[in-house]
Length: 412
Image 1 (cartoon, helix red, strand yellow):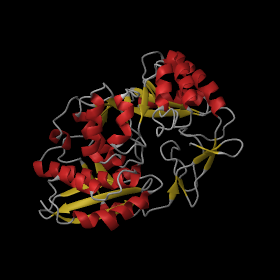
Image 2: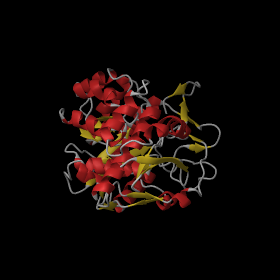
Image 3: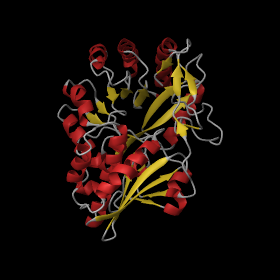
């Protein structure tokens, strides 16, 4: 099967998505997700100007060879733009191979290791009452594990709170599902670490008192803490038995996690901004984390993320693949197939896409009793309606950023 056509499709139904569509000379098509929130057009250019010319005429069956060729021949390796582009190619090739074989991709990866994928949703509230209502609403939707994010007294708008004010033209959209602001400049938010560290333990105490000890609870610190602050947070949350504490400190400084690990037994999840297995080398080998947070879309595709997770499995570290709404339904499908096949699956983040997105991307996955399944349609199980996608042109959008009270730019 020779690749004889490659198209990069940009659409913005509920948000911006970048999709690579490959077509072979015998008529098979494959889709790959190349979305990079707030920097989408950088990946579009990388694909159109540099990658697509290299794909035409290649054998679509040679997935590993194509991955190595695209990674090594560029010389300038790694990084989110490069790895998102390679991921899109990789997903599209697995999609084609599955369709040619008449099998869902998870069967090509060794078959199912479980019946379904435990998924967690995002509950949040500016107040305790609003948070409780959100948790109950997620339980009614079937979620068996829930991430808890809370407003902090004195701060106007912070990451992860669904009811925070959104932006013009996107009224009614959950802020935690789509924080990227459509417009020429990113939105500025405020932050105070000491207020956050005082408030969060009281929130989890209230949640446990209301919902009991059995409900798996997760929390995302979103890279905003120093190592000693992260250790303090982990210790303060130990009585509430978290499933994990995510991104407690900027992950680029991997040695910092030694300090956190030495001072708390709260499980740690890291990696949504990582792109390669080399980003994980130290923290996996030293067992400084419990869950790998990478998305298939941003970590070189199924081929490469499977290698990361196989490496992690040697140290009893499990998957917790990133699944925000800025990973398209194609990228989510790839995560479901990979999660179903690997042995060391942990949990899957599942943020539900909007109605317009679901009309552009027709999907075969199922969501039942708190578990996801990619379905048994050959390939990844996602079709793109090109005409529907054409109704929603790209709109510039940026993720917000933080400033402290004195005006210093801080991690968002």
